[in-house]
Amino acid sequence: MTSILDLVKQKPLTIIISLPKNDLDLAKAAFECGADAIKVHCNVEHRASGTRFGGWSEERAIIKKIIAAVKCPVGLMPGAGTTLTSAELLAAEQEGISFVDIYDHDMPDWMWRTKLEKMVAAGHDFSKESILAMAQKGADLIEASIIDPARYGEPLQEEDIANYQKIVQLSGRPIFVPTQKKIQPEELARLKKAGVKGVLLGAIVLGNSVNTFKERIPAFVKKTK
Image 1: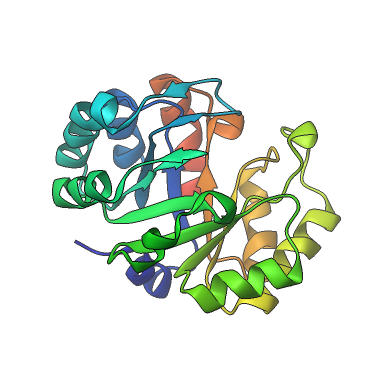
Image 2: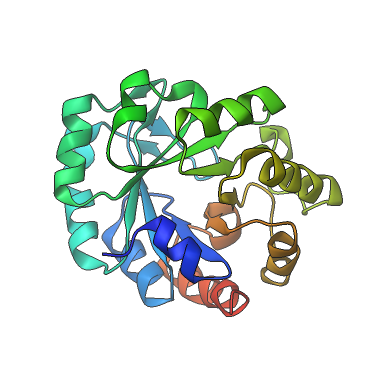
């Protein structure tokens, strides 16, 4: 199956749907509406959706069903604070997970050595040094998750674009922007112009139902052409 890095090389802008819950119907809707990849979660309370995701033993069965149901890469956020163990991550890879997406400060040292593609997230307290360190340690992609939680859901600002562009220039890696701000489909052109290679669409712009997924994802997909 095509990897995230392959998609980045092939497409002007890659769309990953970050599921607000590990749900088969949502995953199917995302794929059918044109998602390039899908992200599931473990070991975290998701701030934007309010969902609590359990550990690998709790989430494995539904994640396995999601992987079987969609014909696109499926990535895993393996936890915040507590993450999957190396044995659990190996099991996830064997089930078909193709990449991990985790904050740099939550990533254990052993995870840098996994064969899975690694998307490493910079937080709102990012610095030039932290971005350079991620690139040097072996991040394949960087998620610019840099919006202060107090500003979640606000409109996209020029300051945000400038910060994304700064990370593009510093890292030398493909940069993905999550929809912490309420990014509109027509604003994807501004992100592409700044050098962003992909977006992670989540609950703030997509809602958390099959109906809102089907209504909103196609508008974003259309703007990636």
